[in-house]
Amino acid sequence: MSEAAAAQSPWQTAKIIRIEKRTPRVTSFVFKLSRPFVYQAGQHVDVRLTAPDGYQARRSYSIASAPESGGTIELAIERLDDGEVSPFFHEVAVVGDEIELRGPLGGHFVWSDKDDGPLLLVGGGSGVVPLMAMVRHRAARKSSVPVALVFSARIWDEVIFRDELIKLDDRRDGFDLVLTLTREAARRPEDYSRRIDAQMMMQSMARLPEPPKLAFVCGSNAFVSTAAQALIDADVPASLIRTERYGV
Amino acid sequence: MVTRGFSSGRRPPTDTDARIPPGQYLEQGFPVLSTGPTPRLRSEDWSFTLKHGPRPIKKWNWAEFNALPLTRMTRDIHCVTAWTKFDTAWQGVLIDDILADAGIEPPTAFTLAHSFDGYATNVPVKDLVAGKAMVALLYEGKPITPDHGGPARLLVPHLYFWKSAKWLNGLQFTERDEPGFWELRGYHIYGDPWREQRYSGDP
Image (cartoon, rainbow over all chains, first blue to last red; front, side, top):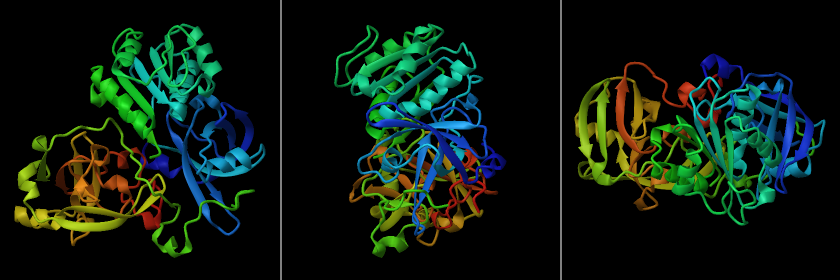
């Protein structure tokens, strides 16, 4: 992002126009921007809440929607029990509320269909959100870049965007979904039920016509450390691996 | 703009207010952020090079670097992702002591700090000298873990923490203030948390 582009990311108000429960802990909020911006799949926004006495709380959330979503953005927000901002969204926010946000932000964990492929995406829990923007961007652009998404969730019902992902997978158009459940048995023949390891990475990459040109890994720090090491053990050069880590 | 229905929040105790820059919250843990996989560097493979432009001034290996004077620094740190952590305790070699060992005065007013993974970040010389910054070797008395930048990381605690480059392998004097990795990707060229200089274009 150039300096001029970033200078055009002032705080703006955005109205919640749709709320959709994704999983027991994750709900999507779709915002209509008062000042629409162009963004790249993988970027995030900063959200800030202001109390009547002026106290402000601010958090970053990845954008789940494709850049083609036209003036709206979707944030999929996981409820953190000891959180400050996520409980507000889950318990207080309703359609019609106006929220302050600024963006788009971040210029490293981004992918466009003009970039090289194949692409390997590895997400843990809500770490799938920026990867979902990439998958949706690919679909919106009718791109033929081969993409494999390895998505780790605890249980089947915590697979965020599950129906949409499976529908995209069923197209057999070069997008491959691999689910791994860490606390339940696998439901589909191509899926796993264990933590991510090098063997799973190798088998998932074998679904691509050639080795990935770029790998994006997102999730908790523990997840990203494990998954990035599994990729390195599966002979993916560290220089091709981009990471984004949530929380402690 | 007041947000409808937001009143409580997780306010810090009022006696700590003055230590928390605008837009930050107090974090008890120590979150990890990085752009790629964590490099696993053995200290015997580690080195630190001081450069002026492309020209090396002096290079230290791990043993030579550890023979430099060790200084303690306990500081609050502020990450641009909005967490602030109080009283982080480090030990390392002050930039002043590195320059003294190399026998030089800063030849320019700007630097780029470089890391083993290709990361770089710019820090003006005035923010590194006079006891303001160090190359940290220990955190809470123990070797810095790889996730937090070990074997050695830069510590510039008064700027947003992306300036405190992990897996440090060199410091390069530059003629101009040259943007580093995040500074080229939308983040502020200087990064003062007290002026909330998060992104380029912020005052």
